[in-house]
Length: 264
Figure 1 (tube, rainbow, N blue to C red):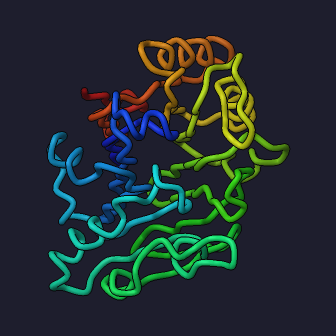
Figure 2: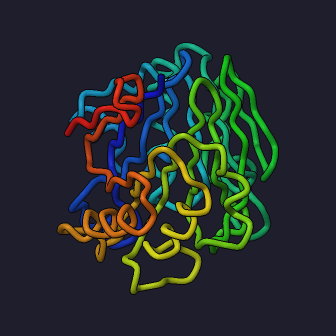
């Protein structure tokens, strides 16, 4: 089974600075691992709000170094390592976040990089194994040229697009996914360079045919019911169950429906 917890489904600078929804990323629990994906601003606060204890984490995955994806990474590392008292867990991200480049400064301090048992830079098509799970990095088409998506493979296969617009061939990385989590910043009729809108999300979903697709990481134009309408449109067009995630939503794939249970 897999359990997906959405701590904060917002993204983009205007949602981040105003917080009509959280920008805290999501957590994957599968095969004994508890992994925080993209701990943006407010992750610790939203975790407490939604009843999740970040001290349970066994790993942290950061797709790239933009603030809405990594601002709380250091404090989440401290939670995972029990107040920096126990070297445990892993941190997985791209080279910008961990080492920095000529163009982009390192996002996480050397002190915090030293706290996990494993800190690893990963590039597209590389795979990191932890316990019974493999995590494969996927290329994105984003303003941050080193930004990543991921495929988590265990008892279930969970895909995560990360940030970026749809590109030809992207579907090859996600074709075997049971659940596909898509960062969908804008509605279908409102494209924005280097980010996915609902029309592009529909294209990727219909080419990958997951059992369940979940839209999240919404900009302002996807709030106030628009994300739900876009998800309904995608489901009608593709025939694939599609949800708009909500803050605090939990998806549990163990339930007999095959799509899991959805808890607000």
